Amino acid sequence: MITNKPIDGLLSVYGKNRIDASSRVKSTAGIQGFKRDQLELSDTARVLQIANQALKNTTDIRLDKVEALREKIESGQYRVSAAQIAEAILREYGNNASGD
Image (cartoon, rainbow, N blue to C red):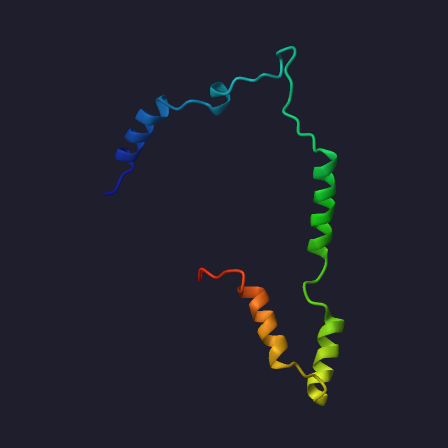
């Protein structure tokens, strides 16, 4: 026969040591002069927060430009010279001569 006596025995031992969570935390609500934590943003921080939200709401891809380029490529009108490509590569990577 299976009984719960071993489990009941453990619960009775550990149950005596149980501490109610409310008895562990002391309330500061009744203390006079108790001040809550407070956060104040500077004007600069508020402006940055608004700008950051505006950036989140914009798309990273300018669809009008993409469509115009797509039409030029498909019609064969989009031409880039090798010199323009080389200049762009040097602008992007030319300042990093150490190879990093």
